[in-house]
Length: 233
Ligand code: DC
Image 1 (cartoon, rainbow, N blue to C red):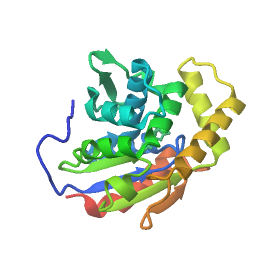
Image 2 (tube, rainbow, N blue to C red; image 1 turned 90 degrees about the vertical axis):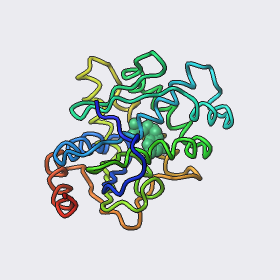
Image 3 (tube, helix red, strand yellow; image 1 turned 120 degrees about the vertical axis):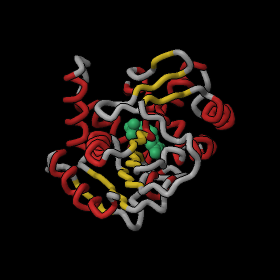
Image 4 (cartoon, rainbow, N blue to C red; image 1 turned 120 degrees about the horizontal axis):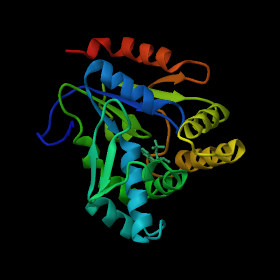
């Protein structure tokens, strides 16, 4: 288990990989972190954890102050596993699978639109910046959470391609899903993430944009690793 964030401030280098869901950023960020031997922050899992905690506590997803309290106080813990999605715990409950459902994704997108929730999670995310380095995956890693990051990547892919990838991922887990419904959900979530007033999904002005619609994961990882080579110590 690698628990980052407990040794105080550091000047460890940061690579941010932002983009919409299904752009491949989770897989790519993890592969880059593994190749470099760096820590990995899946910030979406943190928002999903708050979404699941809110659903379980019966909190109205529009109740900003209750959600902010929850984001500050919820006992959400990560076991960062470099080879798979992180294990996430809410108190003594393993919510690793619960946070990956569409319902949790929608809840995460709603709680993430609350400025007070984002503020409550900021320090928690920044604490992952630890030697030898951090790869941070999310929506606002390069714009808000790590604006000083040495390398910023913004990953895109067409909504149709992202829905197709999500459909394949769900089928592989034995979960039935309807492609047009997935596409509609992705488009709804994109719209909410891009147009929210706080930390909208936009590329940082100094980000490199990669469109992964017709590129393999390996090709994108190779490109990022070429850009990251000067950061290795
Ligand atoms: O990357 P993901 O699908 O696991 O993210 C779930 C939701 O959390 C997504 O709809 C947007 C939100 N999110 C965010 O607003 N900021 C982040 N840094 C990461 C995720």
